Image 1 (cartoon, rainbow, N blue to C red):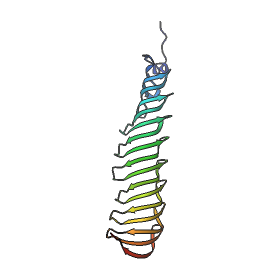
Image 2: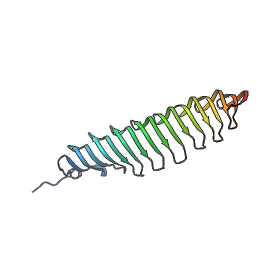
Image 3: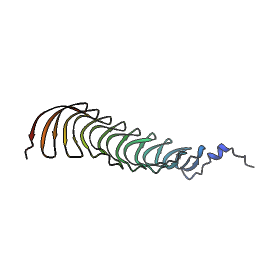
Length: 212
């Protein structure tokens, strides 16, 4: 007569076919695919207790290689994984309608990438620690556009801002604010040389009509 299995043993019951297994882990997590013993290793599908599902390559129990993670809210992130996190080129489409296509490191946007949001916000450029960092182009919700240098999410360094009315400001930015000498070119072609401190206009110099 066979021995009665414990609850723990039943939860770890495996159905083997070559090196493929079907495993039900404690807390309702499930895995079907290639494994090394009881550890996901190779290609498989893992459903987590949080409701998210990963389909793709594993290495020693963690997503590693090409794969797709689908969250319980419908958000999907597809691309390269390492040690269980996004590392490499990714395409992430979120439930709120936003989308990111580009490089990631340790689960954060890092390197070249493009973000677009449902509210009209857009960024194409360099990232670091999940924030715009380096050279890039951004379109803000109100329609203003900035092209230039970013530091951890804010315009900092040389850049050009074109506001929603068509006026163009070229100069030095710090923490998202105009600081120093700026050249303003209006939609009429008139050029004004202005001085700013923390985004406040403190002085103007000569004006000229822009030549064709």
